[in-house]
Length: 163
Figure 1: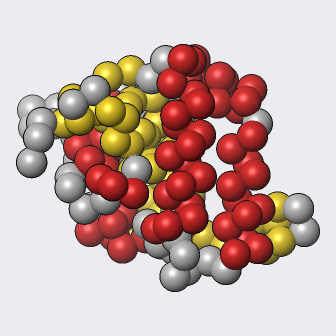
Figure 2: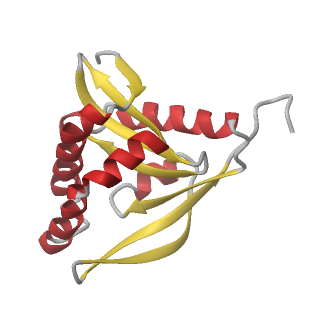
Figure 3: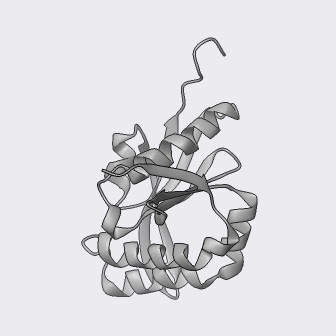
């Protein structure tokens, strides 16, 4: 496996991030969400201002392999994982784990006690493996289409020697 490089996201990355977002929803989430749900969900990628605000206002990391964006994730206010997506070609190759490790490290450095995320049915097993537990089911309505996901949380352990 080639080396994964992490870097801060740039506004210039938005077009590629939107493409990965839509592609991942269509391919990885096919078994958990029907076509109408995936179509409604993918339309949320069109809100360009949301992407600009996330990149400028969150701790937003991009993973690259050989200069190609393989995934991305973001941490809002050091307490909530907002975005976490891996390009289809890189699923199962450790990309999301490395992004997550960077986000968690940042949260721990900020003194965060509990990390949360609103997680798709598809991503829930990944987050459970990382130590997250389901707190509740969310029912989101986008363009009249109901899309369910889960609020999950993980209690973070401070670095040894701190309390």
